[in-house]
Length: 96
Picture (cartoon, rainbow, N blue to C red):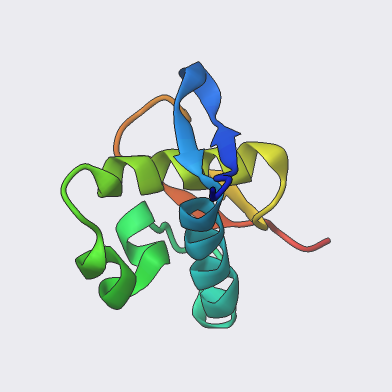
């Protein structure tokens, strides 16, 4: 019997850890190409290959995962404007 690990996001959404990690690693791997003071959506952060591979209903879940990672400090990004707007936009954290 296979045990699946779930992650609880805001508003009691749950996601498989493997999906969460796939989104996280794709974004972390692409951080070196992000520009300071440029706004990015979840789609841009995930990149065309990952975003295009998402099944129906997975893109909003990917967006929720990214917002969760930003709130928890897992990704070096911050919200642009109100974090409750959709689609959310992100910029790199400023380095001081």
